[in-house]
Image (cartoon, rainbow, N blue to C red; front, side, top):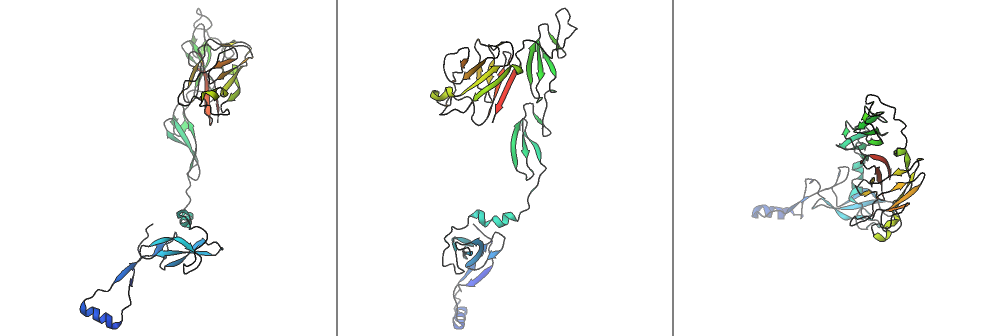
Length: 325
């Protein structure tokens, strides 16, 4: 490290009066050298070869450090005496400890605590000490430090013949039902002959919506290395149909945050029944399905440190989701 130069000048040799007079006659130069002081963390200087520090030595007394007065740098040793003759048993203070006092003297910053937009689709929480904490994704964009709302929670909207419902977080439309006679103004029409009359669709029958599905076992972190095929079937997720009618899942899809995608074959889950989807290979049955993960180099689907499962219908509309951390 380099410290400011202290303007101390000392003769490198002592001259007698006669030698000084002789030198002035002969023009002989008097050798001099510039001495440099070493700087403490509190901006004071050590002007001696051996100086006391605020650190402690092995016996609990003050430690001393040797200053190289030619370079103005501390020598990489600590001593227990003011002559810098006996070294301490403890290690020399690190650069961090030298600057500790200086850091403690700094004014602690304070910031307004709360969420801040990090970019167009993410925001981050800023703490009162100006450090940053967790981040949050804003699927519909971050505006004025707030995740923008796509819709009003639990309201309905038509998309062609499909009636959609705004989820509770107001950031996505989820499939609600398909209207046989068309959809207008957030409601299904009664019949093709009564296009101007609508009906209340808050409780449709035999619709496999979000309430039909739950996950009874999410085994995302099995024993062994699930990146390898031999351990891959230790990774699986088990679904249950909570409705009192069967749900046809043919061509529905399951995906995650990394867009790993599984497309259901011809498959129906019965009333109050369960099935498991394994990440590895096997033979499909009424209660077991296999992803046959093709991904490389790691075949695992679900992240051990957090992920989200999305279940979408054949129209790619979100029906159900569940995340974990």
